Amino acid sequence: MIEYFDLLPEEEQQQLTEVIQTLLKQTFVLERKYEKRTGRFIFNREYRILSKHLEFLKEYFKIAGMEIVENIPSGVIYIRGEGIAPERLSKLATIYLLILKLIYDEQMASASTSINIYTTLGEINERVGSFNLLKDRPSLTEIKRTLVLLKKYQLVEVLDPLEELESETRIIIYPCINMVLLGEEVKHLLESFQEDTALENEQEEVFVANEVDETEIEEAETKEQEEEGTTDGDQ
Image 1 (cartoon, rainbow, N blue to C red):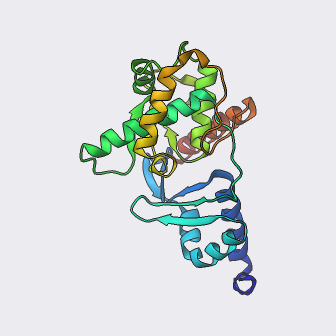
Image 2 (cartoon, one colour):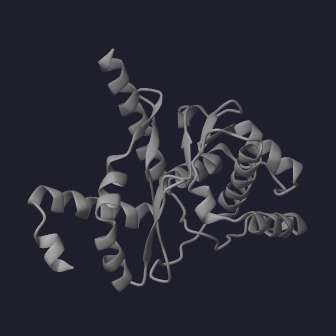
């Protein structure tokens, strides 16, 4: 296994090292991602690198108690297994994740021709209210923190500026959502939240994410501004 890596050109070794670090950080790597600059879904170079070296990576992650999986129909490469340390997800983030999965499944069931589904912040919050999942309305800061967290793990793409969140804010739900939750899990968890909305502020240790601090929110907003600046410069 080490011999395989050593025989690669130095530039390719560096690229492989970087994408391994990315995969460990965000769990999922998409084949195609939405690029705000062009307004299109573009091919992800990191996915190509992982796919090219997949057999080597299977042995590499196996040593650490993890499995790397390529889901070709969904265009997702991800890692799973006991070697991945569980992290924490706030109640609001957990609820948003459940609602996003619900919306994703509904639109896919209606013969959607795309594996990427569009929704809005308003639709998400409307579903939260209709299921009576929260006692109080979350603050904009909480919502922003939650969206940054879900974006970090390649679950969503927020198409409009984070600093201007409103009901019309557009959101893409990526197919990674299917690797996180199954339909039956959504049903049971929604019922669980409905039974006790009084525990809104309690932290739930569920799924694959951790809390995002204010620094990460600021970094996400800065990245958005840089992308917009690049767009202006290209015109």
